[in-house]
Length: 434
Image (cartoon, rainbow, N blue to C red; front, side, top):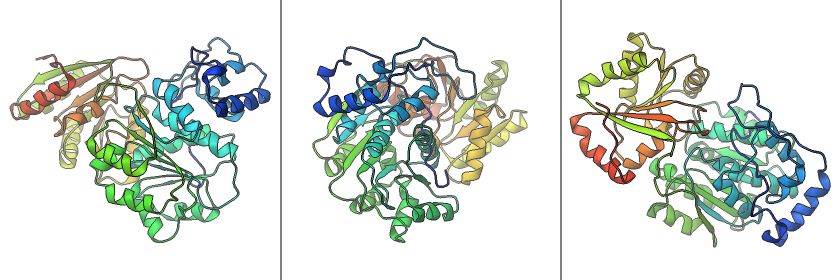
């Protein structure tokens, strides 16, 4: 996004349900609902969400009045919802969107793939739309840990804001800062950024954060893991004290709770899934194998199983590069993605993988949270992660959109302690395949 806001890749809109009656809504949402109902009377044809690039499968028509019962979203946002084809809210959307619309601070635990991007993007855009202000300084800030996640959140906001008079800019490192500076100089409403590059712009006075009304920290636990806490605190210090703040995290660790206490005011707390729970539609398996035999075993599993799309995780950047080279020599189409790769190389590798031009993508944990790949069938842990929670984040790339996925771990003798720690976290043993 160079000067225009990008919009959501996945999200959904609610059907009428047991919370849908107006008596269940706050006075603010009841009034908002009444205004919105006056603006929409035509039937809207909704469709089931399927991967981008495929034809949409028609579903039964819904009355537009059904769509306002809970969220009271404006017609332009509902048109964007219709275009993406979602009909029902996910649990995090069901619970978070009304809270954000009311202006409350929020602390929410939700795994990647639960629809949390739309849980904050929809109400954020709605509030910007309903309270227009003419100014060059941004009014909303979304902070994310990685370049890939920043681009995906930006894509999400661009789609949702397609019919809205909302300007935005995507800010991250690894690319020329000039387009970002040009957009900031012209004026934007929404900034989506990684902490490092945003702090650079803040220190050079290229961005004014003193008018921020809404702050979103997405995947806050990953930002802390990556050592961004000082940058985050310096950015927050530049924000006005009176603002709405939203914190989304996969876990509620003590570090996250400490950050929340310094950031949020009387927040609503939402936890839509058990702590560190793996996706329910993933089948786990373990192969006990010597370290030297992992590479040939991986090749055999991919070739013999005729697997067309596999995401493979290694612990180090060097290990990712070396494995990619070996798989390429085996005749497999492969690319590696990690922090040392340029942004252009990472973007091309991810796009080639999504489009099926390569069969195998080798990644480090730094990229695990930022990957959004619809219908990914297989994830392989070539090496187990140092931190058990990262196992959950890795396998969260598969078993999405209602489809089953496979998570395979190749475990050498020196990794068995890590395997036991993962099984303890999951609360059950992982079946042994061989």
